[in-house]
Length: 142
Image 1: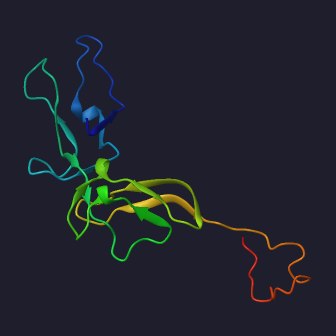
Image 2: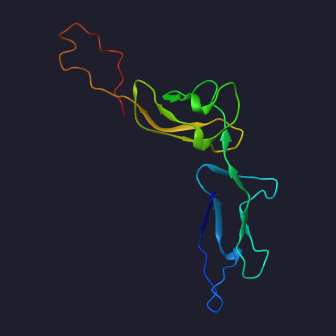
């Protein structure tokens, strides 16, 4: 839990892996930097044993201040600047936005960052001018 291991090739004779040949990264919801290691790593401490994974910790962030436009952070994300684990924080798209809201914690100790919410865009009614609406200052959405 907390690690993504890829690119490992087993030795043909022993079927063991060498940590130097593996790409080890922190899984989503985890970030690098622990008291044991600044980078994710697999330590092989006993011949034929299992790797001891070090370097990733559960990411903890706080609610952004000011709040990020387009997102509503649930109470589970904490308040008052305290750090909360990413897996605990729930976010949704704010009124006037659409999408499937997700939350990221890119740097432990930093703010949560919402993704995948987009501002609603609508076409003006075809009869807007006829109904007395002034549409001259409306920009066309890209």
